[in-house]
Length: 614
Image 1 (cartoon, rainbow, N blue to C red):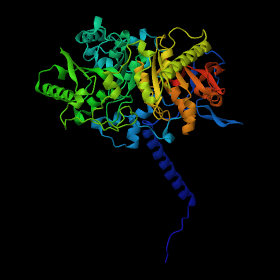
Image 2: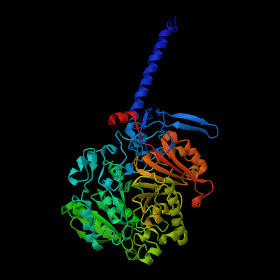
Image 3: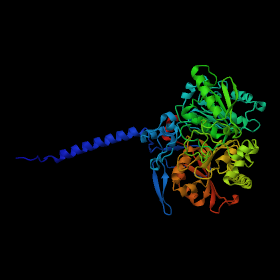
C-alpha cells in the first residue's frame, strides 16, 4: 500500500517555489511603496548646483547623491555624500509630521490639539537625507521688500490666496505671491487696525509701542503674520504662532516674508516661553475655544503675559448679538474677571483686557474661587514639555512690590540689566560684561566675512544657544531678527532674553526644531556641538538638521572646539557646504582649543526639479 508519493519532477517544484517567492517579494514591495508615501524615501537623484558666489574651492563634480562612505585613517568612517529625500518631502518638519503620527498609530486626543503638538521620531527612524528645494526655488526676496511679496516657486501653495481672497491675506501675481496686509478681522489693512488699537488704548501719537513700553507681542492663530509684520514698524517684535493645520503653510509664508514666527499650538503643553514674556497678546478670529477645560488656554496666555499686559480679542464673540456669541462673551468676561483681568476698552469689534500689576486682587478673591492659584512649588518659567494647568501663576514678591516688571522702555531695555537676573544668580556686572564680550565677538565674525557680504544678506537669524541674548543684542544695528534658542536642560536664561526685548524659545537639539526647511539666512552655534557630544546625541543628525533649516546660500557660524570643527569639515562635501574660513578665537576671550568656523550652504536642485522648473 502506498503511504505517499515521491515528487518525480523536482524541477517543477523549484519553479513553483520561485513563483511563490517572487509573489511574496512583489507584495512586500507594494506594501513598502504604499508606506513610502508617508515616509521619507532615500533617493539616488543627481544634484545640480548653480551660482558663482562660492568664496573658496571649486564646485563638486560628483553628481550622484546616493550614500557613499569613505574611510579616514584617524577618525574611522564619514559620509562622502548623503542621499536626497523624495521631492514630496521638501517641506518636512520631522517632529510635526502627521504621517509619522499615522505610521506609529499614536493615540492622541484630537479635541485638545494633541495631533498638532511635537511628536518626534525615534533616533533610528530619523531621515539621513538632504531636503530638496521645490522646483524653481530662488534666493528669497530681500527685506523689507519681502514683507509684501515672495517668490511663488519657493512656497508653491496658492490655496490660501483663494480661500482667504475676501480677507486680503494674500494674492497671486505672476511669479510672486503678494500680501496686501489684510487679515480675517482687519480687511482694510494691519496698519489701520494697529493705529485704531493704539487709539483705543490712548497710547501717545497712536503708536502701539507706547513710548517703548510695549516691545514683545504674541499673536495666536496668526495667519500669514501680517499683524506681526506691521508691528515691526513700531519697533515691536511679535512671536506669531500657528499650528501645522489645514492652513499648514501660513507660518512658512510668514518666515519667507522675514517675519518672526513659530510652529506651535495652544494644546495640552505649555508654550515654550517663560512666564511674563509679552506685553501684548492678540487673537483676531483665531478660532480658539478659550473656555475649554476650565479656561486652561486663557490661563496659559495669563502665564506668558507681563503685569499690566494686554489681551486684544477681535472676534464675533466680542460684538455679535446672537444668543451663542453673547453666551460665549459673558462666560469669557466672567472668567477674565475671576483671573483679575479688567476690560481696558471695548469698541466696535474688539475688546482689550489688561492684567493686574500686583497680587492684590488675587489675595482679595473669595476662598474657593475658580480658577485656583497655582501650587507654591509650581515653576511658571518651566516650559519644555510641561503640561498646562488650569491655575493662575501669582507674581513674585519682587514684581508685587515693584508694581510691574520693572523693565526699562525700549531701546534702553536691550542693555539695561533686568531685575530677573538675580533669580539666576547673575550680577549686573556679569550682564554688562557678557554684552560687551559678544559685541567684540560679533565684530570679529564680521571682520572674517569682510567685504564679501552683500547688503541685506541676512534677515532671519538663529542663535542655537543664546544664553543671555547678547549675540542678538550685538546685531541690533542690523536689519535682522533673531530667534534666540535656549537649551531646555540648562539655566532658563530665556526669561532674560525676553526681558531684553528679544524673542526666543526653548529647545532640545537632540531633536528636530519646529520650523520649515529653508527658514534661516544665518545660524550661529556657540558650543552647541560640544553639548550634543556630551549628551551622546549624533553630530551628523544635528548637521542634517542645520542643513534642513538653513536657506540655500545661507551661512553657518560654528564657535566651538577645533576637534569637532575638523570632524565637521569631513561632512562639507556630503552636505554641499562650502568652507569660508576657520580662525582661532583667542582674540575674543575663548579657550585655546576653540575656533570660529564659517560655512556657506550651496544652492542646488535635484535634476528632476530642475527639469520641472525649466
